[in-house]
Every structure is written in C-alpha cells, then in structure tokens.
Length: 103
Image 1 (cartoon, helix red, strand yellow):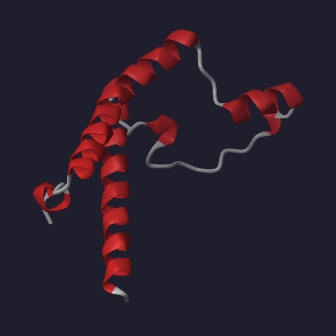
Image 2 (cartoon, rainbow, N blue to C red):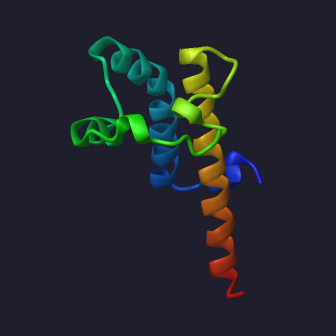
C-alpha cells in the first residue's frame, strides 16, 4: 500500500500533511520542554505527596522520554514521533480495512 493509495481525497491529504507537520514540530516541543523545565505531571504529584523517593522503576521502554535511545534528545524525539505516528497510522488503516471488509 502506498501513500498515494491512501491519500486519494482532499481531507486525507490534509490529514497526512497535518501529521507530518506535527512530527516535524516534535523536536521543537522537546527543546521547549527543556527550556521551561518541564516535568511529568505524575512525577510532580508524587513529589507533592512525598512518595517520589519510594517509586520503583517499571522497566525500560522503547520510547523512554518520548525519544528513541542513542539518537540524542532532538533527533531521538523526531525519530520517536516519526516511528510512533507511522505505526499508529498503519495500525489504524489495517483495522479500517478489516472493518470495511466485514470480517
């Protein structure tokens, strides 16, 4: 399946363009988060409740910190956004085709 086969209608092309714009903005959001000292809301809540020191790590994930490991902050964030958006789009299209076929 190619992008041309998917983007046949105007709203589909606009949607893909919007997704691409959001992926391109992901490194800007990572940069802005470091500039303002952003912290995860759950981390903030744990600190306010006084239980942050008792937190146990849940393991490693592919998108730890919303970035692909080993690529640096901004390139990793871009790669994570590209991979995550692509996987989500492929999965949504596959589910849509299954539902449309009536299986």
